[in-house]
Image (cartoon, rainbow, N blue to C red; front, side):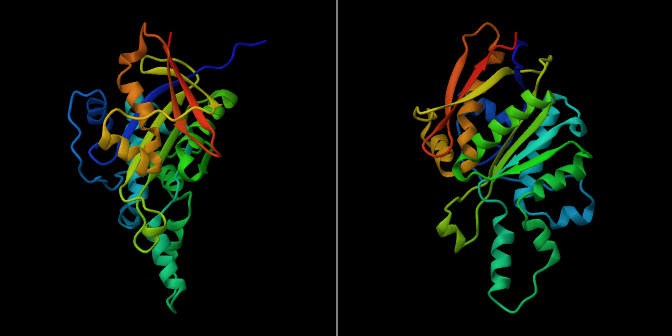
Length: 272
């Protein structure tokens, strides 16, 4: 029997309230910097043509921003990576405008419709990265981060190629906000590889379990974990931030929220 394929984390991207990028977020998650709550700031992706850059909403900007940071951190070739995009709710602003149009006699804007589809961030990433590798887009409500992570790791193991995982959520406007009370934007991304490199941070594997999810040791960050579906991945970033490369350290295990009263156990181990 051949040896099982190991999966390695090579790069991380992060942007959320008080966590504007992975470098600053890592210092917050290690306790080197205090957590200071502040709005999530997203910037238009430079790789998009000007017309598309003007039209995309917060969700696309957020997804592409963390995706690019993760690829840069891994020093990977974006056009060689397959990708998995995962969001619990998708593009709330466009959904709201489409609902208003359907409830009136207004015509639906083709641009609004194009940007409302759940895989819009994946499509725009293809434009920015020029990637023609397979791309999947998932939705699993509050378990969307774990669903995306499970899918991405499976693809690495089966296809034996690098995969970019991008998970992101943003608020709906009212009145949809009352039904889905996500009030802040947060995104994170991981570059996963079947081969260890000089940039690899840890080896990772997952399995289903029935244990309670891992929580964060700070009340404000734990509130982000619970209130933003993409934030369910923060315990994984906390473990990676405190691992110091995992060289010579004992393996770590955390538990993330998943679906149907099951959780996802995540095992981190040294790259060697």
